Image (tube, rainbow, N blue to C red; front, side, top):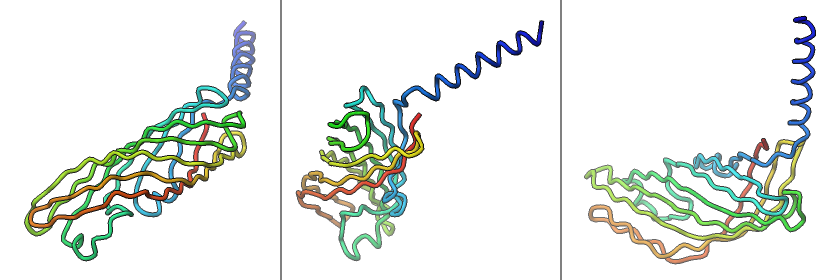
Length: 184
């Protein structure tokens, strides 16, 4: 009797596993390779709503200064911490949630500057939109490689830390993404 129940349980488990393996994967977790190299540690999640549309978001943290800030020696006396979040939507014109995609996104940066000598601190939030065009490859049914390029718009910001004022101007910033992911 127990052998029959065990056999039925094994067949049910194999059938369920086969159905799950053959099901489309609608979720993805990925990391940005450029971010890992530059010290910006972030993870992103994406949910495919259909073969043509996906929504996603994520965030990260960097103990280093931003790639886009160049203040020469002024940052030598500053401790800079940077956290960020992103929400995005993707359109896959070719369908099947792979291949060509167009991405619209909104990013928010949370920046903390601290003068190492005086201890003066300042905190700032910066919100900026962006758009990318890219290509997603699906390898071995679950791994993804995504490459995209585009731009984002940043507004003028002044950072006052003690006696020092740092300024970034309004600008269109280039964006390049190289992400590795996993479908589930």
